[in-house]
Length: 84
Image 1 (cartoon, rainbow, N blue to C red):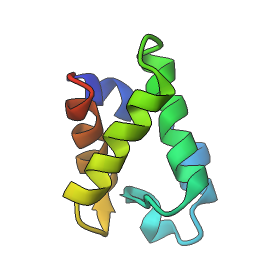
Image 2: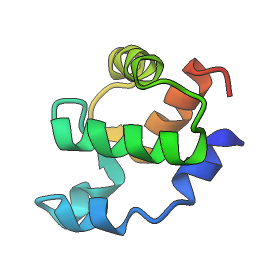
Image 3: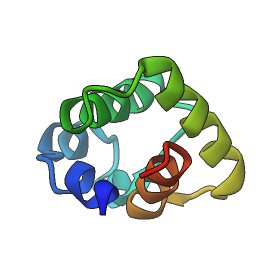
Image 4: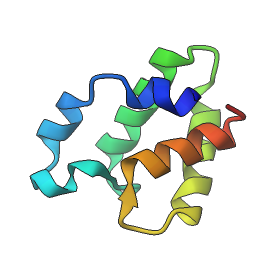
């Protein structure tokens, strides 16, 4: 359910920034701006979670969710790693 809070946020800036529109539904662990964007989204909806904890959860999910990583599946993985 916590992943829904993050996913229900406005992702239009993210979508607009993706180089190809078809990529907008996939998360790239290799793009620093995408990593920072997701960290900001998670902090906005869960301010008690530290940046370091989010980064650690993201590292684990980058290994567990194979590329191309669907945004929804990736965010769900990260939130699960964070205990939500």
